[in-house]
Structure formats: C-alpha cells, structure tokens
Amino acid sequence: MYQGLDEQSLARLCSENDRRAQEELYTRYAGRLFTLCLRYSDSRDEAKDLVHDSMLKALEKISSFTYRGSGSLYAWISRIAINMALAQISRYKFRFSRLTSSVSEELPDPTEAEFARIPQEKLLEFISGLPDTQRAIFNLFCMDGYSHKEIADMLGISERGSTSMLVKAKYTLRKQINDYIKNSE
Image 1 (tube, rainbow, N blue to C red):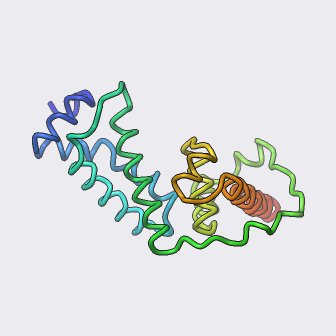
Image 2: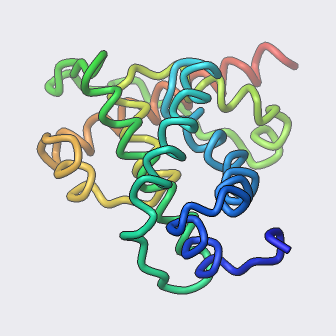
C-alpha cells in the first residue's frame, strides 16, 4: 500500500507520524540521497551520516513541505541534504585557497570515447578528492544546477570567487582524467 503512494500523500502521512509512511520515505529516497551526499563528503561514512541527519531533519520539517508536482518531494529533501552538507563543510573544514592564483597550463578535454572508458566510481573518487571548497562549488554548479550568484549567496563568497574555484576544480579533474586515460592505455 505505501509503495504506491504519491508524493503528496506520502508527505501528508509522514507529517501525521505514520511510521510505515516514514519508512517508505526512507526506502524511496535514501539511495539517491546517499549518492548526492557522497559527492559532498570525504567518505562513505560521512555520506551515510549526512543521509541519516537529512532524513531526520526532513521528517522533522515535513509539515512545511509544499507539493509542487512530481519530483518535488525529492527536490525538497535533497535541498535539505545539500544545506546540511554545506553547513558541515563550513563548520569543520571550509578553507579557501587563494583566489588570485590562476590555472596557467592548458589541458585538452578528453574525448567522449575516452571519458566513457572511465568507471563511474573513479570519477566520483576524483570529485571527492577535490579540496572542500572546490568540491562543493563543482557539485553545486555542475551537478545540482545552481548559478554562481546562488552559490556565492549560499557560501558567503563573491560570484567571482565561485567562478574561480570552479575553474580550478575543472582543471584538477581534467588533469586527473587525462592522467588516468594516459596510464590506462
């Protein structure tokens, strides 16, 4: 019965403290949230903690959820998870490298065929290896679709700082991808 519930009904039942509805919410979204949190965290354990904390907060705040169409419940929960991940980064390890340094060496972009040969786990490893600030900005911009203005507001930095960090993150990833391709031939 609970598996077939639409998002709006599921959220309503969760707000009424229906335990089975809350379990369904977790079952339905925890896997996707884990993948999202893994992009923002240093380890699988940290990502699991973020999922757990995000789901608890979502259940605590579920009565404030407003249904806006299909997918809006996951979008709402994922925003909670992203905010919690950013808060954790800023609380424990948010360190800006100098924004004045620039990336001088030009690196070629890998071809689609080369890129397709890289396992997804390896790409996630490259992303998770980025410095905290670069990883957060890369994920917010490239994966989650936020603008540099939105990122700047979220992180309390300038739009230019966001752009600069993204350039550095992309450069680092491009270098790692090119090295991986070169070493796997």
